[in-house]
Image 1 (cartoon, rainbow, N blue to C red):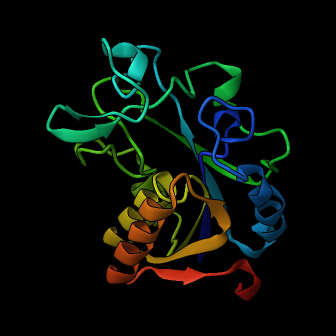
Image 2: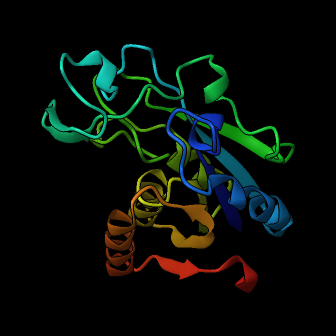
Length: 201
């Protein structure tokens, strides 16, 4: 049984959004086209309170992309994005969501960010995604979405650590920074995550 995880394909990560991933909208036709190949489709959704401590605006004199210590973790400070209930937090209207069986919201605790669709960055609170997938008899997980070097990367890594055969769909994601993207791919290979193109599905 194969599952597709759509990671954070939300307006704020698309062109014109608060934290736009370059060329992020180019993945949507690809993601829409492959959905019929999977037994189960789920989605993650960044869903931050306004006072989230990953926002640069919530730290005096901080700038976007500054790195701070946040409760023991190194934390990149981001522009305000995917605020609960905002238009920016909504899925793209171009994304086909009819087959999405469940949505897992993340980043709701203001004290810790949550890149992965499985856990927060402390690995102290689970979203319930692992138990859900295992309850559905899923063995293979395919990960796509935004952004390649953050939320898609951490989701794929956690999927592998949870025991799933994990596939990272290289053409169905886009990155924020090339250096961090290349480091993410190197780490995923070391964890034996499969890097595949959707044309090979």
